[in-house]
Amino acid sequence: MILNNFEELVGTIQDIICEESCVKLVFSVQQVIEIPANAIPQDVLKGLIGKRIGILNIDGEYKVRTAHSNIDKNKINKGKKNGRDRYGRDG
Image 1 (cartoon, rainbow, N blue to C red):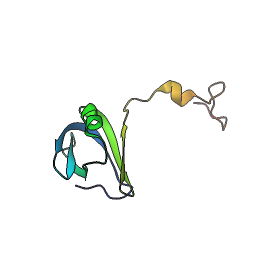
Image 2: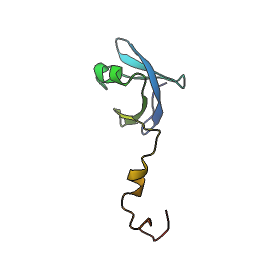
Image 3: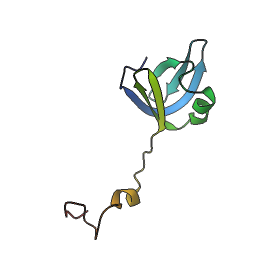
Image 4: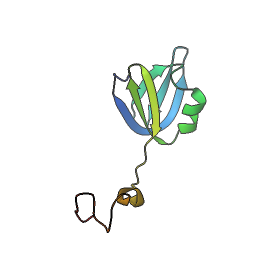
């Protein structure tokens, strides 16, 4: 699989397979995608093995991010006053 423009895959990366012209990323969803060999440094990719990540293709430039599954309630409550959001709703 090769990501289309503005397409993102999120999952836990299990392994990478280095080939001459590309690096294949193996996700726990059993989806294998191909990216150009020089798109993301292989040492960065190796450091992400076993982590839940998102990879996004933007006009042929690949962006990788760690995807957090737990929501930090402190971040959600940030910006609320007296337990209410900016619209005055309880939250």
